Length: 91
Picture 1 (tube, helix red, strand yellow):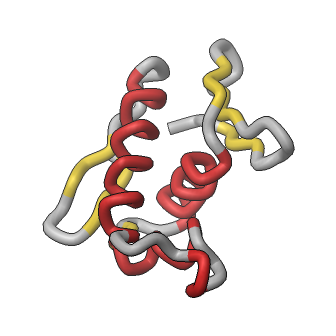
Picture 2: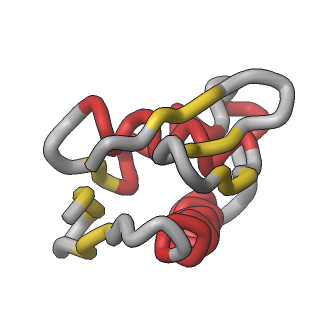
């Protein structure tokens, strides 16, 4: 995958030809997926909610929703995310 992720004010991912806008939390998850072979739900929660007192009641569900949105956005560029038992990896 030859994609570049921008984590600026308006996050996006680009492959040089296309540019797809991302929510900040989606950009953070993509950055984490690019930095490691596999990202688990437990690893993703503090990336999205760094302050534990700001976490929602069901943070696992929030991570899954964001990952579904990210997967849909990346599909436009031909990038896929594989689901594993407790997490995800770039395919």
